[in-house]
Image (tube, rainbow, N blue to C red):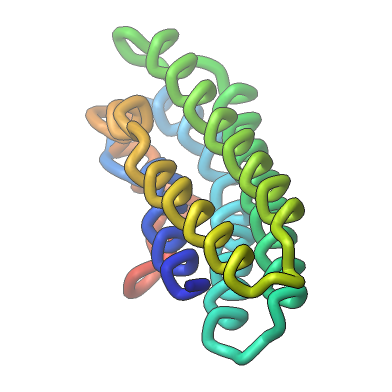
Length: 185
């Protein structure tokens, strides 16, 4: 059951890397992108580490209590990372493009919303009964379903943010560049 949870997390956390996208030659866009991208990589690393801990717990023969503890800690870490990403975009202000205010507000709202949802998942996992294996597995199934839904939740604002001039500027920033292979985020 925890394997479904791990699979859902891998897809669900992809939104963090949607901040890395396209390019612009304008100094304003580069400056804005640097403000955001300097904060992206540490948060992506936290999300990847949390996902790795869930994946490891799902592959090992851990007790329900150990799985619960691992998952809860991972969701807390992911929640904090998304909050920090939202704060970074918020602090950078609107990107210097047409409709920048709306793009900015939508991206911040989405990132903070994802943070809140991961915080709620942590509370859900904390409330699971580990004494009854069947109830615990059923609870994890519910969490996996929520994760899948969260992963599919709109990343339209972030997709818009990564397009055009600002997206290109972001792609040129070290903190927003994807490293080799699939990031697993």
